[in-house]
Length: 318
Length: 315
Image (cartoon, rainbow over all chains, first blue to last red):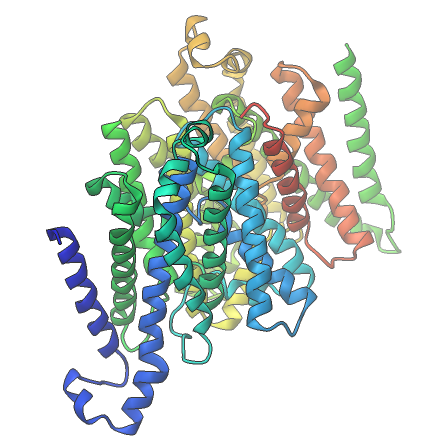
């Protein structure tokens, strides 16, 4: 195991432990050996679910970004910059309007269908755009996302659901508790599938003609990639909310120091995603302790700063 | 010649809609109703015209028909300013309630932001305008994160005021504000008059324009600042309508089918007025306020935009 991986793993363990023991009710690691009933409840109803959902969300969002970047051959494509998040949100709205008593499962199915449709539409738009400037594509994607949002607003306003929809606008882990976060486990098998397909995604990233030439069923691989992205985005959106820029910056940072081999990067991208999200969450929990800053804001602020840095840096080295 | 006929018919439709809006369904209190509606109509014409105008100019500069100037983050900045003022001073404070003061603060901050963005990026890059837009867009997301954070922890009563400002509204505009905006816009328009002649050449692209003797960077910088000022004024006056410009500019290109900006801009201005007044008539008299105009326009503009993208329009 090389140094970088080791650092990431150590960071991961430390942050996880810190995340478990931060909170209004103080629990110290020493208490673990003689937990009172109350402390047990806190740990198992709130702290562990929170930790697990942060880790899974971090891993799956950054892997989604990595897959999308690989498939679209553009470093700046991710669930936030390709309309996937916004489409999933439209899906949630539709399920709220059509099936007012929808279970989580119905919501997640509809949200994923919309996320999938939105991502396909964006890929289709990319095919149609002749002018493929690396910077122009995320611009189109963000505009596309804005438009999907405006459609969402249109229907939400009509049905007086603006407030319910904004609940999904901002990522927030403070509502994660046992009994209402389990949906996020859907992402685990998806991440495993992503790992198994990693080499094929790398191939598919070389373009349709080239990869078909090498004996790859290009369409199938691209579709599998997009389905993984859509399902895990919908799962994260429904349990946690929107986490902007995560899928964008984490894979970029990893490929900055590690090159572009998807299979080699997958593990580190996943770890760094989890580390980054854990760090942002802990930050949000201690800044105005005992209150919390939602994760959407901390990641939004830190994430946009890093994104800008990546953009400017790219210009400087291009 | 044919374009002149088209423009005239657009003008006739616009004027007819204005008259219908002003004088139908009036009841017995016309001394009260007509002046109120006149102010509203003036505000609509002002914002509609400045949005249409600045979008066409912006698209000519960027050489791209699917971009709109508010994407450099001006809309989000407007919401951030409003949220911040209400968050810090409360919804009933003078700085929030006093429309004129609020308007001035918004315009100054937005123009300042656009100016800083341009200054910073033009000094560094000079060339890639998409880079500038993307940075603006990311700044917009940043502003949005801050505002939604403040909106979450704000007093619920204060939040109602914020929600009110999220959607463009022509209902609460007073005469002072209108006069102020007209004066500002006229000054900007006079300044712009010097650059009109370059627009047709600029649409040929940077290299061609320089070849034909245009001081490209100088002119484009000035034009971008004019666009930012106009968008700031119209947003501060009524609130954000992101996709209106996109809609009217593209309809105008298709309808007029010319490269001459004198026609294109005039056409876009008329179409914009038609869209706003017609939309307002539908919202107020047909739907009786069950939805807001800006939501409908963003919806239609958004669907049209997706259509443009899928058709692969000169992007």
